[in-house]
Image 1 (tube, rainbow, N blue to C red):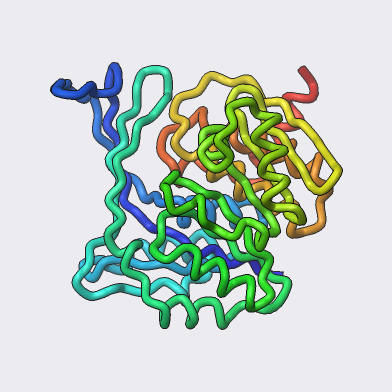
Image 2: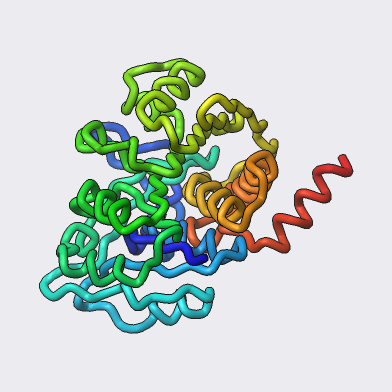
Length: 301
């Protein structure tokens, strides 16, 4: 079984600040770093480092050299579905990172919002019924991509980030997996309490597996009549940028190989905890051996 990740590829420009800049305010940054990012790329790396067989489809600007593809290849990720789009720039993000590890992100989509129908069809034609298709909300025409994947018999998995008004019209009943955080869940359901959000999503996605992440309060899971909870792993956060993508990749890698959901949730929580202890997005994602060692260490405490 292969996991097809159709998603964004960005360059992340990360600025260390004392606090997030306020309207009308100019502040100094103590450090600037540049990383590869984008939710599609991040989740593909998390899937690969968790041991999944993964292909990434997406778009680069025409100015890119081969370094991005070379990096992905070094991670064992197949990239036949990544295409350069003439007249575009690769997407990028400006990330403010404060002293507590929290972030604020300004995203320029670039080539990620210039993907054609033909490009989508070329990429999805490589999948087989039963394969996983992992999507996020950093591409254009997300609903068409979701529907096309469903028609082809792929198990569609959605991480609806970043939040936009277009998400409200998505056919969530098509989803096999919906993985989202509390703010995204509140936007989709107009609810505020985590349990209410979970139940509202279960109503809209009656056959899907729903994972609602709650940051320091862990995560909740729903599938039909089953309900589970997973506590967070307490660590000192350095940078939370890639935590959600790490959790998503590790969870889907685990369930795709047949792990039970409680085990998948535990692995994902420990992987995300390791990620927030490191700077950057893609570079912070741990490898499976690190997660196993960390999990063993935590159990001994």
